[in-house]
Every structure is written in C-alpha cells, then in structure tokens.
Length: 305
Ligand code: UTP
Image (tube, rainbow, N blue to C red; front, side):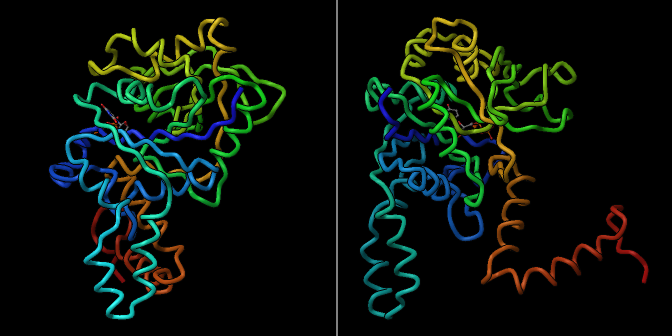
C-alpha cells in the first residue's frame, strides 16, 4: 500500500454550539491562546509528514483561506516597524503546507465532507483530521496511526477512553485485542448511542487514516443520526465485512486531547495551554490559583477567610 501523503481537514460544520461567535466565522478559526484551532491541526499534519492538505470548507471559508495566505499590508507594516518576531508568526502559517480548498456545498454531515475529497485523494490511503479536535503536540498520535496503517494496510481510527457518562456524545467502538498493546480490532461502531447503552467506553476522536474504499461506501451511505451522512456509519460497514480491505483497527490514544468544538472544553483547552506557556504561564499561574481559591467549595460564593 502506498505511503500516506495527503491530509483532509473537514471544516465545514455549522458550529452551532458556538453561536453567535460562529455566525460569520468557522469555529476552526476560534483562537486557542493566540493561534486559530485550525493552525494546530495543520501543524500536526505537517509534523507527521503530510504537507498536502485539503480543507473542506463551508459558508465562511474566507477566514480560513486568508489565514494560510499572505497578508501584504500586515507584512509590510511589521517590516517597516522592524517587528521581526510578529512578522515571523504571520509568515509561519503562510508557508506551512500546500493547502487546497474545496467547498462542501450543503453541510450534510462529516461523511459527506470526507466524500468531497474523493477526486483530490484518488486511490491512496489518506489521513482525516477534524479541525476542532486538538492533539497536544507533545503526544504522538497521527504518526503512530500512519505506522499502524502501513503495517496492517487497513483503515485506522483513533480511540480514547472516555467516562461512561459522556459516551453518548461520541461514536463508540466494540473491540478485540491484537498482539500490540495500543492497537485493537474494531468489531462494531455506533454513533452517539443512547445514554447508558454504549457498548464500551472507547470513543472515536477526530483522527483517521482511511483506505480509499471508504468513498465507495460513503457514496451509498444514507443519512443517519441527526439526518447527517455519518462517517461512523461507513466505518461500521467497513468493520463489519472482512471483504473491506481487512476491516478497521483502532489506535488507543492515552495523551492530551482538546475538543475545541464544545464551549466548556474549549475554555479548558485555552487555560491549560496558556498556563503551560513560557510567555504567559508565569503571570497566569498565580492568578489562576487565587481565582480558584476564591471559588471556594463550588457553590459560587467565595470561602469566608
Ligand atoms: P460537529 O459534529 O462538531 O458539527 O462536526 P458542527 O456542525 O461542526 O458543530 P455543532 O455541533 O453545530 O456545534 C465534526 C467535524 O466535522 C466537520 C466539522 O467542521 C467538524 O470538524 N463537518 C461536520 C463538516 O465539515 N461538514 C459537515 O457537514 C458536518
């Protein structure tokens, strides 16, 4: 099987959980500290050796395109001011990868967004990185998934152990062990199971290495949960039949992952990443301690001191 060279980044969702912030801007452009979420994702693809990036865009695509393009006026102003640090930050996202864009048209679901990549991808395996799911750059996931894909030649998804109380928010996998500790064979998948019915606590998170046969399945996948064409449903079919190129394997990820599509998780991600930064941490850490102490016992009133 050919090595993976292409990454597809679906960023065409409506982002309704973040309205009104996402009324005129994709949620993938929300800043996580001082970089839009999408830049972390493209940096992750590039770090794994994937420099051909196809972004599937929606109605507010201009902000995404502009972010990875040159901004002449800003560059010349910073040049004039001799502000080389900021100029470097501006130029970094421009030269990061070979980014292509494709409109999804109607946002008919993640499966539909991935199907739009068919022409660009061709008959090779390819990676999919969700633009609102961040993996901490200190923890390796995508590189490991690409290795497992090359060894096994199957379709690979990323799995994370989640608390059973939140399993209904994810696609959940039923699995069998393999000879590798962090790799499982997927025997079943269910998208957002009703509370209390999840077959395991292994949730699919936003990283995939897909075989091109997924397009054949997606082409005839009917709308599922929420009336959307679900990637999980197509993967379920792949996991089901041994005919589908060896089925589906999961790489169990035990590192740090931030879901920036959910408001509370987004805020946690910003705080966590900012606190760890050399330029912001020293100011934020003592403030945060004081702030947390002031929250008291969780009833919202400060503790009496
Ligand atoms: P979500 O399930 O988070 O949906 O999409 P959403 O519409 O973006 O956000 P909410 O739930 O309304 O707040 C998961 C990923 O799939 C992409 C999104 O951009 C996100 O990266 N997506 C989803 C598409 O590209 N197209 C779609 O039609 C749906």
